[in-house]
Image (cartoon, rainbow, N blue to C red):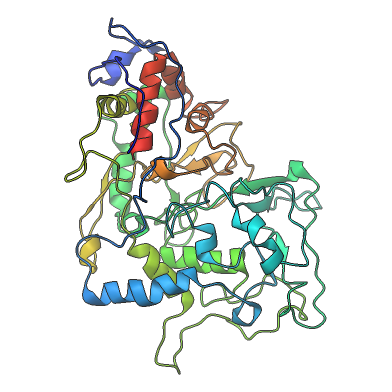
Length: 452
């Protein structure tokens, strides 16, 4: 059961005209007694996981069989060298990174598997200081190459050297992680509801981004743009910078980058040392001569495609009704401009999967990239997303998320909100309004977010 602090901060549903006056931010607050307490992140919502289950309706018998007997098993499989692990990798299982609050999610709040499993999966390696037992799972990207040219690519943390199945003669070393000024981090993105996100038409995303019926985007300085494929110009939408077009591309890239497994989408080794890369290419492929078994990346795609969107703690039948604080926080979330980027809902389009056909996706994201300012900039460009631009993170399931922002720099939701403000950030005006709310009203917004 969730326990949120009682508040007397009654506030009616507002429009941008209530909070903006001639371009200057001002808050019109009700003259009511307010409890004297400071706002605080309620923390990870208790109870069973609100995510991890397959789509509730519209799944055919074949869809469900594939999800349960093939896709889930492949997603949770622990890789070894003979099946393609390495030569360089960050973890040895999809489910290891996408673990909380259920398989398909993100970093667990404790017992970071990159630390816990290091002695088993990478016994000849050192765990770098930026990985901690109760910190987030991380991948490392270098900002620049040794010659000063832009890098931005992933530099895997571990090698297969030291393992019992390490090929004879393979003696590569871990990257040099001493130059902290040249490193940025990324944490795993939750994959819940990913099939719904994939099924939202480009036209819907573009129309929503252009829509500003109340003028709040214009007055708050919110613009944003979609990231697009360099080939066909369609909207890309997966990853921290919305750099990947589809779940299949997302799966193939992650399999190669995070675990070192070559596949039909990324068939070449990233490690040049032939003594370490001894398997046939691609290491994961469709079994044309073995009963036409799907490749692993197809199974990964199917697992993510059929994961349902997270279930909020309240507000939808037959779930319990939301508290006054949560309802008030929902109204404030929209009123002060948070929903200008974190669009509460978008509708999927046509699909040959009934469970994805014209469904409401309550993702709280516009799937566009926005300037987030110097404080969050990672100096990496991916596609059309520049050094300080990031995809609006979907907030569904945020009530059971342990770490926030692209690099997992905080586990405090309030701090994550405050970090949206900064020089050049499109969110600065919204955060300015947030800071002017009463502590009890800020608490209502936090309570609302933790109910998602």
